Length: 267
Ligand SMILES: NC(=O)C1=CN([C@@H]2O[C@H](COP(=O)(O)OP(=O)(O)OC[C@H]3O[C@@H](n4cnc5c(N)ncnc54)[C@H](O)[C@@H]3O)[C@@H](O)[C@H]2O)C=CC1
Ligand SMILES: O=C(O)[C@@H]1CCC=N1
Image 1: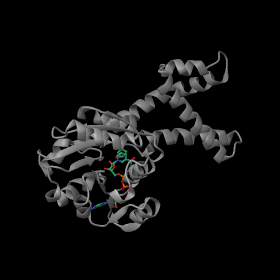
Image 2: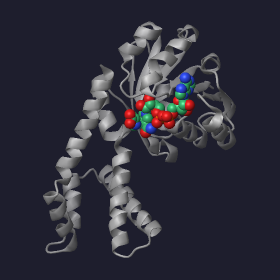
Image 3: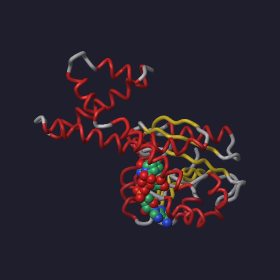
């Protein structure tokens, strides 16, 4: 069994650790995480019984696969501080936005094994969506192992690095937009008199069901929308307002802004 380490123990590392432990992919004694303070580490230790340390170098020493899960603004400095411990056999898995494979190779060497990835927080409930981009030193068997980690908490696809900015727009960041959509729908249900907690359940289950229909039916989303819109009915009234208010163009512009920011961060 491979040992898996995390440098950074925030929202995303916590979601991945939760995902891999809950799916029994790895035993807790084979997982180690470090952070700047003990606050998150204590929570992860209490919840999943993993090993924790304040020293990122301990993580690298004790792992075969090292997840770099710190914020992009400190990423290079942290990678620099552990680079002498990264041998040819270790696999570095980055989850950071805006950190290209070549920028990591510039720090640790282009002879090292690197996989750039982009997961999302639904990993915590086993419904993550992740993209993986291996560098040239990753062998098929190694990619399979790391993909297995991501598949243990949802779905994943191997993509060319040129697609990673779109991935951030459509899946890495998109849970935030969906939460906003759920919150807004629930607000309206509250206006209609529904208690708030109940409103979140109705809104969230509808989003979950609609997403499942897209995935399982293979039908075009427009066709599925038309199935809900009875002639002269309630839904088409809502659709008319959403079109008038520019819902589609707002979403397209928002996701494009996210993609642009990701490109800018990679420069
Ligand atoms: N939050 C999200 O939905 C997603 C985040 N990401 C990426 O994941 C990375 C982490 O993001 P979050 O988990 O949201 O951030 P966060 O702020 O929740 O966590 C950052 C972690 O890094 C630790 N840290 C800070 N300095 C450190 C150091 N010198 N050594 C070791 N650990 C240190 C902090 O203590 C904290 O545990 C980012 O690069 C982000 O682009 C990727 C996909 C989704
Ligand atoms: O907002 C961010 O920069 C990170 C990357 C994807 C989701 N959160």
